[in-house]
Length: 466
Image (cartoon, rainbow, N blue to C red; front, side, top):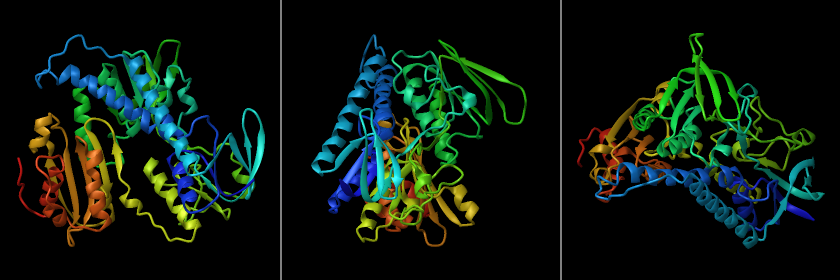
């Protein structure tokens, strides 16, 4: 059978692209090498990690904050096996939802590993058979996989990545994490809240190097209160796993003195790389850059006409919602529309507690670009709603253009800021000013009032709330 479009990969980018293609009248198929749909995000990424983050936060509150709320509990125990089981149920339900959407939109699902035979033909190999399908256009949405350097001796047992970290059923006493980025911090906070001793080794001189310094610092303070240790500005020299433990050797970047940490597990969280294994890209003339990312033009079309690529396999942040927007863009472009994505306004979130969220430029980026700006900050501890819920850690920062007052960046650390950030995204999409943000009526008492106050600060005004 010949399809108008075939999508390789059923993660958020792939399945959203498939749905939009079908909605626009294209005969659509999606190829997925695994037995379940949803890709990394739904199976071993965004969804399962959030399930465990919520479970661990409930446990932490029961053992640390319930008493102050006047709730007396006793004999509280962390049942990690049940947490994993609940996480698996959430994943199963969510992946099932994707399957339902495929059927509802009359999208053919073909299981197997897809490899390009030509620019209009794909070979799909499953355990049972190999078959070829023809198409007019294709979208590569195969995502990414964890980076695990050979020298780290990744064994999936004691030296693990995020995939294995989501399925540990016996609570480890100690875990060392290489990399203090988003993935490492989220999973590290899960285990730290459950009582695991957690230590980070980070090559950069601070955590979350790509995010605003102030909000990263706020998160680090909170994690330190949990007992988490950070070794920033250090390089890992050796990782070895045994049947029951893992040993990590590391050193300061400017010395040769070797230090050592022994733990139950070593979690490698040094980033992810595009997954393009055995796709046959070279056979159809699709080129990649020095980091293995597929080269695309402004319409996300590759060097092979009619072949597009979206999500983690191309340049840009590796975010599920970025891939979704790209999937929609490609589908609409294929049908003659003129879609657009403002990559500067794709928000980023870290789902620790407190949460971090950001959109737009950081102060560092604006300084480097020579753009004059104003800054307004408001601490969560000064907010009535935050005090009522005992979520006083964090702050909101609003950065505006010094001349025009246009909002250039908003950075948050605090309770529910993963949801609050959308106020900033919406306003910035319409190029609002900090004064616009400050003059909008915000309900009282809410966490959103911190946004109003920070915006007021950016305009030179004085804070109004306590």
